[in-house]
Length: 202
Ligand SMILES: N[C@@H](CCC(=O)N[C@@H](CS)C(=O)NCC(=O)O)C(=O)O
Image (cartoon, rainbow, N blue to C red):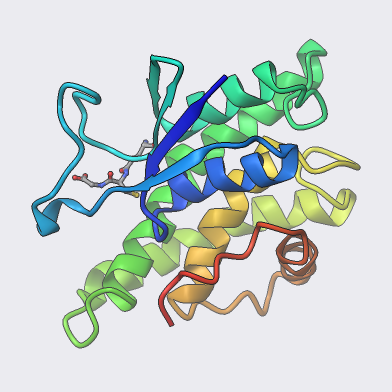
């Protein structure tokens, strides 16, 4: 299978796909797509939503990071990363949704304001994002006190997705101080080959 991955090095969902490819040794061609403001963007013919990441796997076009990592794990022997056993899989899905619907949006907002708009950050929006993060991060920290990874003894797709958002929080200068288990989990994940992006600004 020949895989083209369209994405941007700073995009957290793109990084999810790249981390999984690194972990599973999935060969692919990375095609950098500039962000919308730059003008040169993904053709709508390939992706109606004009979002990255997107893969072209022998003509099979797929968008949405979580759909892509589920597909790649399923087609490339990633049973540890996305278990076939229904209850184990359901837990991974639970935390993938948690990342997409709760953590991911807040982390992206904070990184966008604090890191990508220096001097122009919307401080009220940042304060609200930080307040909401203070409410949801204990849920993650509690899980990581009970086991080394989000869904147990092994890292899964959930760890990859959540890591990219937590890395965004660090980029935005958000302190993980009160969350000791979360802090040590980040260090463990960051030490794995391919997880920490050197291309992130700052
Ligand atoms: N839910 C999508 C989000 C994709 C997304 O928002 N991608 C951003 C980059 S992180 C993008 O393509 N932005 C350009 C635009 O919206 O025009 C996923 O997880 O793949």
